[in-house]
Amino acid sequence: MKRIFLFLFLISSTVLLSQTVLTSYTIDLKNKIDQSEIMTGENTATHDVFVFATSADSLSILKYNSAVFLRDKFVTSRQYTENRSLMGYSFSEDGNPTLYWFSKEEKTIILIKYYLESKTIRALKFQIPLDENYLLANYQKDNNFYLLLQSKTKQALTAFIFKNGMAEERFLDFSSFKFIDRKTQPKTFNQVLNENPIEKMDSGEYNPLYKVSAKSKLYTLPNRLILTLDQSFRKTQLFDINLENQEIKEKTFMKPIGNKNPKTTNSFYHENKLYQININADELLFDIKDYSSGVSIKTFAVSKDDTIRFSNSPLLMQIEDRQPKQLKNTAKFLKVLSSLDAGLSVYKNQKNLFITLGGSGSDLKSISLNGFNFNDPFGDFPSNSYYNIETNYSAFFESIWTKKLELTKETQEPFAADKVYYFLDSHKEAILPYTLKLSNYTILSYYDIVAKQLVLRKFADGFN
Image (tube, rainbow, N blue to C red; front, side, top):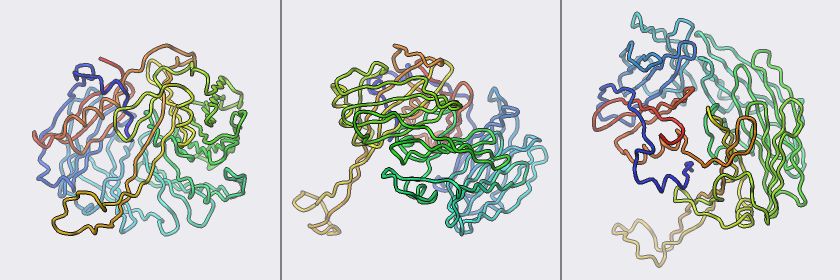
């Protein structure tokens, strides 16, 4: 589900959600869109912006400076990378990019470093040990490329760090730690992850409810991982993983306790604080703890008869991507929320701290076509056919704080992510979208199928 707020449906002019075209580049993908990809990345050492645009038979690398002026380009063939997808990128100390081309069938990555000065390449092959592991996540951080795997037989994760053309392996052993489920029954590390798959949080970006409602979340920091497990109603089990020395430290944060047993709980880690919620139909408990000490900094207990005083928006319920519906009071909101998978998202921009508190879930219904006036001229559907239709739901509200965790009375303004979604929904000619979050704004790169151009647009938080 997309994050769509009520104000998006009230806007009659796109002036309020204005954005700026930074640059465009003419390129013809030759009607092979299904075999084309676009990826945008920042060299965090030089702040150069790179665009990687692939078609079935060519690759275009565009290098822009920090002001997004084109400084260099490299157009080359897809040699060594036929029938492979672009998985990610990294940057070497000399400023040149390395791209990672993945083949699911071969279980390999082709690493190719592209030298823009000499217009030459160097290719290497890396075998991913997918016979013994599951691929959990891949991501870029500090100009390096990371792969994270989960062992099929051992109670462990493995991280591969690619930098300067070399792959460094980190074996992360969780066999010595103890785990329990929500019924306090013992579980192994792999059992917990198999029942609650890891969802990687996007660092520095807004993470929507459908992601943060996951019970196992991974946060990527420089040379460090934070893994939080919330399968238990009683506690958040947090693992602080040092990728330099492979040391794993466990920390336990007890969840707030109410008058009745919770129906749904969760947490979110953000900048050395852990945000926890505990919810049933009668009560919402919200706690913010200091990461180092575990001491509560802020604590809120809201009963169904109370007003949520830290809410800066109406209490909303949304079905799929339809217009959100306002719920009349806290009791109705908690009744809906207690039936969903709870989650909360914390996002900081230059101005404030934004907290989305709510939950998401789905309802699977079987629909019979028998008796419907269904136009089936070819007789493909028997009259007693049943079809499963999944409907996604969410309930949430917005809370706006100062960076010192003080409550505000400000009204919600759109994030750059909202504007990007609104733009793409309104411009069907924009395909192959990819977003890159910079310090002050977001770049949307896409292919304009009418103009046959690769376009970069700038979006920022707030009304312009």
